[in-house]
Length: 344
Image 1 (cartoon, helix red, strand yellow):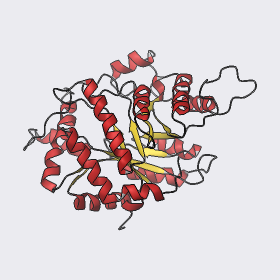
Image 2 (spheres, helix red, strand yellow):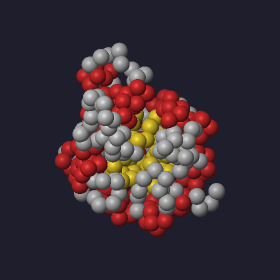
Image 3 (tube, one colour):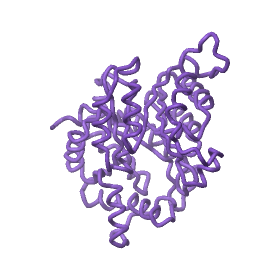
Image 4 (cartoon, helix red, strand yellow):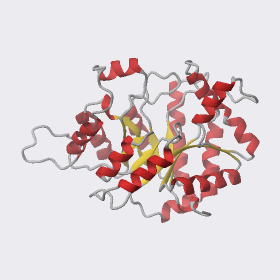
């Protein structure tokens, strides 16, 4: 079990969170600053996730923000974690990511999900047809992949740019639906353990057990999202972690908002505490040694090939420090040079 972490690529998932008293411009500045540091520290990927109508989360125009981050970095892979495909016409996504791939060749990832990235009102506004539930995701995915493949002679509609780019596609999920689909199609799969840890091990096992080799992958390749907070001491890390805990608590209470300062004691009732703890069941908060041990155990239990880390303290400097300490304890910089990439 020991030393598995040192051989596992680390990546970052960012939502361009606003802080209490902060602005959207500040959030975007911090996102790019984090990506630049992550590149220096040896992280493999920097992903942004599509969300809508959530106060405090500014990554709704995900493709635009991916371009912003890619333009300000040089080597790190930048992508979506993910684009909620049922919200969009596959042709539009093919054109957007074809454009990104042309601008930043060999650095763009396309992670896809089937949730709306918001509530019922968001679904109605984005999809117009309220009967759409994401069940047509496999058909939309097939259409998108066709647009990204080399254009056929008799193809009446082409993605320009986009056709022939074959941008790496990941299927994302918090259940076994996308795990089964990714296995069937021979695509890489990422589980959203950072907000829905229940069923994670089972979904990953289903993916590996049912995987069919494809032109994309010869063998299964998986990733898991995990909340991590690293600080000099366990107590400091647990204190900083009250910020993302309050974020989920406010969401449960129907009052989502920006990141708030950490607190010495959480104010919640028993049901709220249980609900928040359930969301953070996979979370690992602590000193470098505590986090190292926790991640080694996590990797042993999940058997994933990559880790997508989420760390959201209130102060940007604390977020940078958390990711820096994680890179140091995992040897990310050295590993980035040694790892033979399976999925670009």
